Amino acid sequence: DVKVTQSSRYLVKRTGEKVFLECVQDMDHENMFWYRQDPGLGLRLIYFSYDVKMKEKGDIPEGYSVSREKKERFSLILESASTNQTSMYLCASSFPGPTIEQYFGPGTRLTVT
Amino acid sequence: TQLLEQSPQFLSIQEGENLTVYCNSSSVFSSLQWYRQEPGEGPVLLVTVVTGGEVKKLKRLTFQFGDARKDSSLHITAAQTGDTGLYLCAGEDFGNEKLTFGTGTRLTIIP
Image (cartoon, rainbow over all chains, first blue to last red; front, side, top):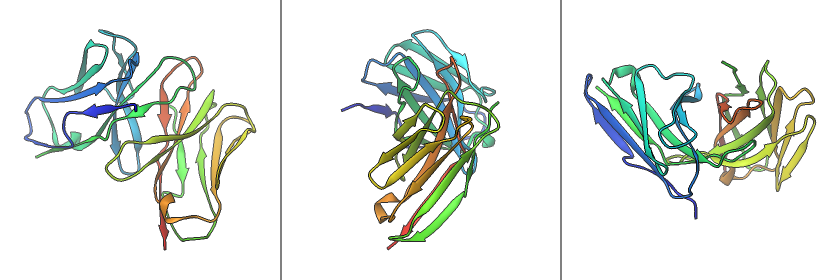
């Protein structure tokens, strides 16, 4: 059974803190993605990675960075959390190629106070 | 950035009724996917449509890709409470493995 896991389901952080969100997949997928989900806006792509140590900016990368040191792990970093980064964060992975299904983790609901 | 608008944003209907959800864009996509997301979970793929005008059926769900590959619809026949969830369309760019997700339709089926 395919599995994408995220390190926390709920997280509360203070403004200015550095935040790490971890994602691990066990399917040997090359591609990994980080999205944020906000009501009425759907899922917006923050960063994605096609391979280890490779990263590409998505549509809303400002205020975020990522790290992919191992194929199965993709980390999202908020260097200095702000209240407008309060959101649901979803990680996904897939094999390369067109029309390929993305498999999602359960999400991390981050609240920045 | 390409945009995918879904309508309606919210839909609440009685069990047994039929419904249609729309996904529209001014951009052309190489393929379009539909996902369903339940509370506390990530989205799960329902179907992928690739060819303009393509129709796919998944039990009581019928998916159609527009002829011009800019829009799609999801029709549910005889809705059941198990159909409750957030429905998301997602378009794939040509030559690019990124997905652009729609704004979502939150569907509630009332028993």
